[in-house]
Length: 503
Image 1: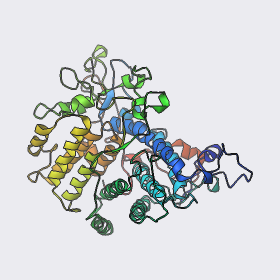
Image 2 (image 1 turned 90 degrees about the horizontal axis):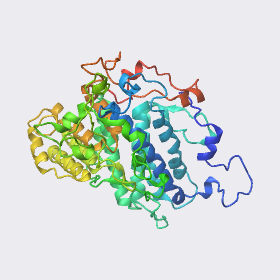
Image 3 (image 1 turned 180 degrees about the vertical axis):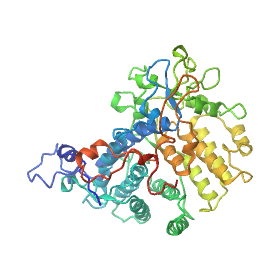
Image 4 (image 1 turned 30 degrees about the vertical axis):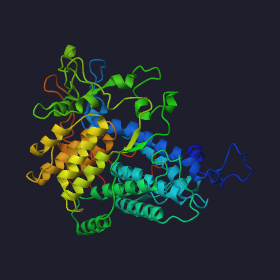
């Protein structure tokens, strides 16, 4: 087992109780951790962690999935690390930093000594599991059982990633049991819950859906113990209800100031309504744009995901240059569209109904749950259309005749899995593309994506035959605890993933 010295004392004091180091009378305007009861900290815990999901995680996913390219007509950069695959310990380190640090707030709620906050703690367990799944998915072994103890343990041990996954299911089940069996004295959750407003029945459906996602992540594994485990756990979901409406988060986003704007929108639009440099930097990729334009089955969502030029998406090959510089990029290029960026007050999304239906479709296709995989899949596409504000009747009807984009009993298992992954990518591109990157890695679809380059002006040179399977531990880990952080080389991340990765 390895240990991690992650937080410097100043950060530790910012996120953890100070009861254990200073025994003095504390003024009311500077409360210690035990005074900040779960109802007072829940909203901040929810919104701060979501910020990383919406911003860093989504950008990461869209670039490595070849959904976005650089606006080479406005910027000279054509070969960033995402295209060359020249990755290092700084590559998207904000994902680790944002998830690991901010989930300490959920741990504090779970461990808070105040009585009768069982439902608040159940919510915290569900959300901590939601984010810790991503830490495992992108890094493998992580600090877990000894994490978030602040000054009580600045060097928590790393836990085996599969063991963490198993315990995430236990925590979710414990949360569900708590929701099902409230005590008479349980304090009701109210508006401090900026996701469901205290609707514990909705939290239970979200927990069931998250459990299904955690189980499906392991579905490529074929060892007898895991197979038996999955069938046992899926059997417990036989009568479960799953998410059927988008799971949104909104603490009151508005355009009052930059801090109150939706954090995803905030990256792209200034307070006066003008676009930011970050917005102007990105354009649609030609690869993804061509899939949406597909003349045989054009996707009605394309004009919501991107701005369109003459009714279609005009994309750039990742790594290409502008036509004036010898490349082939059209001018103008399509950029992020109104279905992705609408207003400072727009909802954030924790999970789409579309994702839930796609998970159910895959679980049914694999025989884990009862149900019509095609019908569930088409409900997912229809939900995605509704979320993006377009009518998709004719498009959905045609999917059963389109291998790779639709599900049908007449298609092969592999074609149906690829269709689920494709539609998941379209649905989540403006919401949580990081989730799709992980799902593509799990199912092997990640290697169908073209690497960055052009067929004209040389393109991007990379010695890597494929995309990475995980990320390197960030420099904050290496500097803080160089003797104990797991040793993972650059070469290894292109061949080795978390425990569920099967090459």
